[in-house]
Structure formats: C-alpha cells, structure tokens
Image 1 (cartoon, one colour):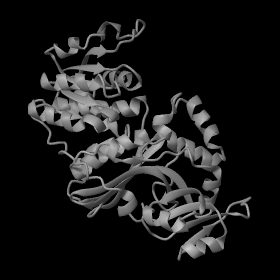
Image 2: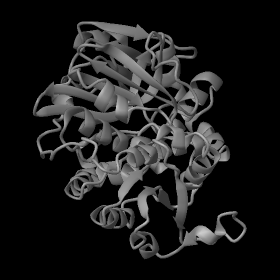
Image 3: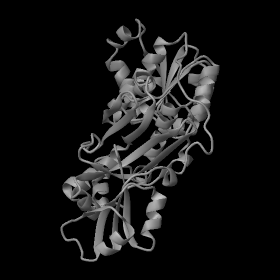
Image 4: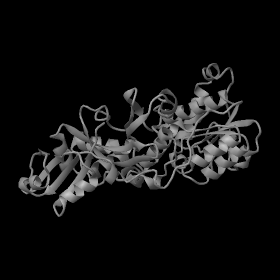
Length: 405
C-alpha cells in the first residue's frame, strides 16, 4: 500500500525511517499488506538524501495519485495543512497527523469530512508524542465516566522546571540550557507561555467529553513568573511545581479546562516526571487514576505513533473507525475561576498576622534566606475569585494553583 508523507522535518523523516526499518514486521501486523513511501512533500531540497527521487514540491502529485491511499501530515501549523488535509479526505484518502495545532483548531471539521467520505482521520501523535493516550482514552477507558485529566504535556517546560528544582538554576539559565540541547526553540513562546500544552488540552477534552474545545476557550498561563524562591517554598511543603493542563468534568454540558503552573505533592505520580518526559493522568469513575508516561516528543517516539496510525488506516481501508466528537458551544467551557475549588500557594510581602486575619486555615511555608517581610502559605480549598477577594490589597508576589492529582 502506497503512503505519502507531507513535511520532512524531524517527525516526517522519522516516519519514513520507521516504515522502512520495520518493513519486516509491519506486514505481519496489518494482514499481510506492505507499506511503501511513494511521495514526500517538502518545499526544501534534499539532494543528498537517499530518498531524493521521492520528493516533490507539488501537493497535486500526492492528491492526484490514485495509488496513494494514506497520507501522513507532519507539516505543523494550520495552513496549508488544513487545506491539504481537507482535499485529501475529500479525494478518499485517509490522513494521519502529528499536528496538534491543526487538530485543536480544525479537528471537528476534519473528522466530519473524513466521515462524509468514508475514510479515517487519526492523530495519536498530536498529544504526548510517543505516549499512547488517544486510543486508551477513547477505547480502553470507554466504560468510564471521565472525571478529570491532568497532564504534563510539554517537555520543554518540564525540563526547565526540573533544572530549577534539582539544579537551582534560574528560569533564564534553564531556558538557555534547553535551547542549547535543542529542547526549546529560539523563540520559546509557544512552550513557556503554555500555548503548546493548551492545544493538547483541547484535543484531550474534546475526546474525553465529546464536544469540541477550542484554544480560545482554555485560559492559559505559562511558567515565566516561576522563581527559585517559589521552588524553595514549595519544597518545604513536600511538593514541586509542574506546568499542568487540567480538565474537570462539571456536568454533561459544562467542563473546566485550563493550563497553568501547579503545586504537585510528592506522593503524586506526576511529581516524579522529570526532564523532557510527559505524563497524563486520567481519572475515571470506575478505574480510578491511571497514568500514561513516556517521551512526549522526539523524532522516533513521535514517528512511532504516526506510523501506528498509518497501520491502523491500512487495516481499515474498507470501513471507518468510529472516532471523534461533536460540536462545542461558547458556554461549554466555563470560567474555572468561579467554578473550580482548590487550595492555592501564595507568596506576598506581608506578615503572618495579616494572613491569619484574612484566611481561617493556612499552612505557612519557609525557605532559606526568607526575608522578614515575606510570607508564603497554602490556603484552604476555595475558588480563585474567592482567593482574590480574600487577598484584597495584600502585596502579592505570586500565586500558584495546588492540584489534587
């Protein structure tokens, strides 16, 4: 069966490598069919690549080739990936994708188009890289009512926070190391401001609860305000800071979804996830908590998930997989600040008496070199709006959510 790859970057080149290096086992797992990479679309030239004769800069070479039945889209971004994918689906070709931005923004339209044309649109690699999560969420956990999801969904920010926690590096120093190692882009905004994690939250929420969630509906906060002082205070509470994407079921027509730094206590499975690794914890009413852990990015881990989707499409050429979600609504994702209760970490220029006059129950924290006019504490359970009202005109330096996962 002929396959095309659109985008020959890190993931796309990995897809070609995995298909070719596993040519002996793939047919055994898809009913005897072989996979052949027939075309590679990229605007760049690769004259020294061993696949030079497969390259094209013309999308129509893939669209009009009737022998190509499956296309792996690893281009990234919404355009032209959306336009290309729509045309492929309408032409009766199945498409698999690692493109989280495209799925988060346009997944509903693409899934509907795939259904209308009797083909498949799959995207296991769009969340968690090589970590299996899409299939487990939609198949293995299908008998559960999902109560919530919390995930470390971005390896770059997890690496930075690990360096801050374990090496005592400042945010800027840890970011520089991440860039030197190739974990962070020259412009790291999408990672450190939480946008990458937000897109993955949208996909997970859409799958878990059946209605499309758009990035604009998910309030997102990054890690740029986290300091070593915060790390030290939270260590005294036997916790660490992680950038978490969180989704909470409230009712059949209301969920909360947000991305932010969070205090995770060391008893949690999420607390031990270090460096560039990702982890996604799913809470079901029957199964309880299950955690999916592994490399959240990288050439071969992500490519393995893409190729698994290609193989799935090869096994389902005569029928569609029942897979996807329905339309969302403007009021479907509610304001978590007024609807979700949790404890909070607070650091402020104040004294203990000022804190106890505003809060009935707090746990005071300490750190080495703590100034006499600085206080840090963890509050009782409340909404963020209630927290803001209690803090009033207190000189707050930072606040961080405390998770119950």
